[in-house]
Image (tube, rainbow, N blue to C red; front, side, top):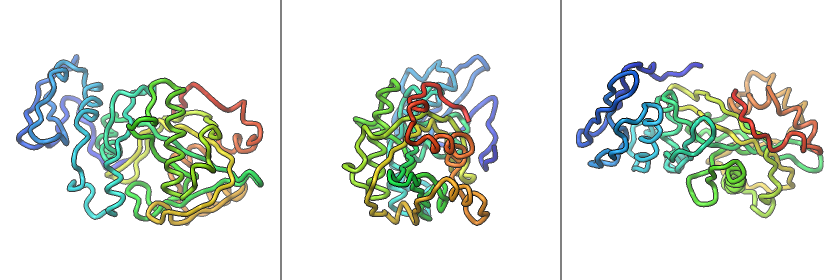
Length: 299
């Protein structure tokens, strides 16, 4: 995988912090590590339970505890659209590799490649909305204002359940219901689809994919992505800050789009298309054999 981030150090991890935050000596099986606490609230001392934690779990805990902070003045976000910068303050659900929530972190923290390369993983969802009359799939082209993967074509809606009541979930059943609520919310925010036209129970959960992909040298994705299908006749009121174009396509038309070198696509959408989408799509009216998969697909 290519990215512009610095290579991971084996003996220590160094992150710049305000001088008011002390460095904490930590121990692991590989020796003594000295890890400054990154992106903390000023003058907040480290909690005692950090001492002696294993580095992999430690890093997740650091991001979970200290990610609720002011980020609008961050150098990484200079020059981006104001609304998209605001959305980077949203709180994502931080996971272990078995999709168990272990904390929360801002969207900005979760999407910086330097954090992804340390193993930071969060929950996401991808909605595929089909016209019930002809089975065509609604695609969107992401707005130029987007911070990650701008201007790329992708599935109907892709985003994150947030660390808010109703969208979290520790076990699979609760997590599925949480991403359904998040999907309904984001379909409204991005595409202007009324929630009444996409009832929660109409979203069919198929599976989860675990993937990692850079956007550029600074930003990227590392997600366990819940795949949701829904057939719905919807009214669209596009949010231009999120979506610059949309199109309903057949399976054959989508295959032709992939042949067009002038078009670019999000990595998760390409992964899903290259592995599972067309088989699912051909069984759109009989999806029971493909739904509610419990195993996470590692991509």
